[in-house]
Figure 1 (tube, rainbow, N blue to C red):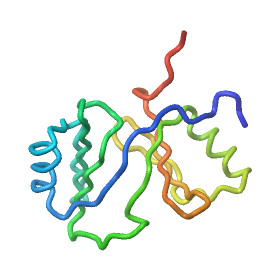
Figure 2: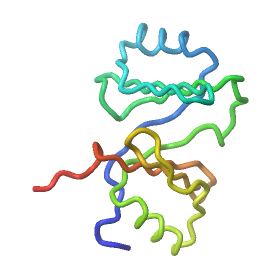
Figure 3: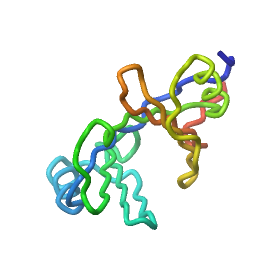
Length: 134
């Protein structure tokens, strides 16, 4: 493995929601969570991430009309990484199935892979996730 290519942090868990306002009322209103970020995508998808502190890690509320049926493909685990492209090459050489090549969303670059049980894993590289130099 490349010496600097590694997992650096846990970021969020994504869940699909049918009614974003209702979900925000529950997570923010009832549980007191605060918004970390909100993305309004051109395809009608709205993503709102919340956590107790307003900082990651958090729960990503994903609203995508029409509401998709639930299933394991709709849930993923996101983790912060350093040097995403190098890490992907290492993983490929190790036989890992990369299902989505890197793409940008905001300042983040994201790729998806499957774990040995088929769970969807997001690898996420962002300037805000970079390890601190001592």
